Length: 493
Image (cartoon, rainbow, N blue to C red; front, top):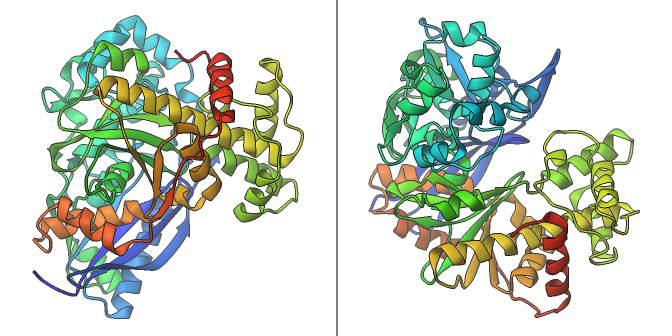
């Protein structure tokens, strides 16, 4: 086994991005954050976009930091969020700024798509959860608008694929991110010609699909000249951030589920084949690609976006509060005063989240959360109850009891939500690692280079070298009563 190798992971999220150096000494992975930078939507006229040029500048800044530090890098891997994309013209130039998945252009598009192809047929072809943010609805909104961007597009690249193109000059589509588009057919293992034809989306714009661990190529000389970094290989990790995060779940045995907790909560299980059945369609679960030809059978849940937007609203009003301060007032708030449906359509867009939460409670004839602590507590308790519902459905589809829930990602730092999750689900919760996405990114690079033998070996390394916190359920009957209320309020089956 090779020792003391450095790998660089770029992990770009909806709120921030970071370049993390992973040093593997043969036993443990030590992480060093080289550069952290903000991210978020930028509104131009009536549309919301990603500032992809700013992200590209920060990526090159990180490479320059590596060069100045004298760090020898074995390879580089990039992961980001899913569904969003850039379009290139025939010369390889980016056509406009990529749209943000929270842009309003997809509002009402699902119903128009269903006029052309039934919901069941779309699910049979894609196995993908129906969400208006999905790539297929973004592209069809462009078809409806007769967008000139789509007319002159030569190549479609999701966000990490676009960055990999700028790094290497190679136009490819990584598997895990391709599966988030709802345009990938997991049975045919390729882009769905049927969906593209039905929706007048040009099939020819979609590039070759590659698997996690593929060596895409050396970074371009234009990048090395600008950053002074030595020529370095770019490896495709699981380019979808949740795919990378799940690769780092520190599981050794037993029946388990995961919650990749951040802006979104993605809760599911790892399976060898996609689960495309009437049950999974009715439950609106999704099948997203994973490492080692696996699939992640999961449910997308709104997640800590609810809390992030509350904090932003209060900050704009001149009330600056850290997340720790928010959790302190939440812990003191009255339990179960009000409950919400975390995935209600009114919570999707950015804006005045505290008012929206109160309005939801008004519309459902509940006691109103009157304080900041009560507003956030209602969101956190409701998230934990949604996790319970998803867990029950996962066990139903799988046909066996799940004994442990692994919470990974930034949400593991929210101890209150972890504790609520254990109590609501009546399952042991193991929280950690915080930097699961970056670690999973690194593990795929390490496996690709032969530095470790497998992802399973990598998970053992993570289990031994990470700080993991265990939460045991308290058995409080209050959660059962709250769950029954939650089902009534949300109308979930």
